[in-house]
Image (tube, rainbow, N blue to C red; front, side, top):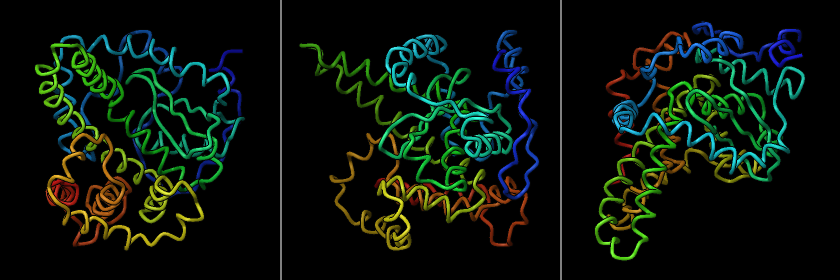
Length: 327
């Protein structure tokens, strides 16, 4: 029996109880396979409107690079070599295997309007999640510790974040960004070329790292859309910081967010390394997520009535830029 036949023969499982949202119908597995075979897709190349604006701008720029279309082939081979061995011990989530996790994955996919992605649970003592592959061929990896120590609502945020990378078609472009930085790093290591290549490397790495940080903010928004609960989403982010659920539950989030104010008072020199960071600092991610939870966009995606003081798209992005800026 094929995987498709097996999934179709399994009775439907109870959906995760969250506020209803009528997203576009996702592709079935048979539709996904047929469209992959025919080389067509009904998913557009435009970013969803919850994406941070610069996210789409830089993604379009990367798409203009001549060899960008070949990165998928290279990436799939790299995954087979680097991650393939780890997947031998992984467990694939399905309606029969970790059904409570599958319900969350299915719910997130429906909310964002994407095909239900493959999800693998890998043995690891750290609380981590990541999406691996290309924009067309991918899977989500969840560590066993993350699944064990997160409740369904927290998983909805974390899995929704990873689904955001798929929804926004980040994967191939993230791989291309890393490949460009690695390529220049290798050139810089060659004797006689360092003085020439190092400036080029910095010219590439700074804007690419900036985009990667913006992409994370975009996907945090996808996670919140899936979890429908700002407080739970913030707690899920906190667990990533302390790597211990008990400590995360005791964390004073308001006090933690005040670290942004303290960081603003640091010297300019101490802030420069942040330009090369691919992930925003967690307090900044939390503050940006709180702002999104107060925006009209969030209420539109969750089909709730927005309060009168809800932030417009323009005000949201201005506020997010302010709290996430480095200098």
